[in-house]
Image (cartoon, rainbow, N blue to C red; front, side, top):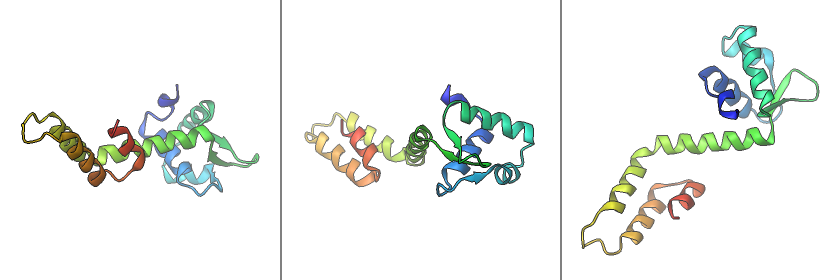
Length: 130
């Protein structure tokens, strides 16, 4: 499945190098050399990324770009990374949510305010407000 194609560090690194390119495409030789992979290891991982439609070869060249699905997966990975980098903020929001102190009658307003203050990604902010 798709997650298995990016589950190991080197596969994910290949995927990220291609994703972080400006859509002109990244040459195989450059990726392989920069990640210090043997050709066999590189092409095995590259084949999995292609098989699951995360990347595609550009115009018959040796350059690779993200597919539409690859862009969605990469954007989702960035959101997950954002959440992990800011886990303490989410824990703080959760602690306020479970507080049963009578003083906190407007707990939903407090939580909403915390979300607005601490979470800078609109997509994640919307998820937390549901």
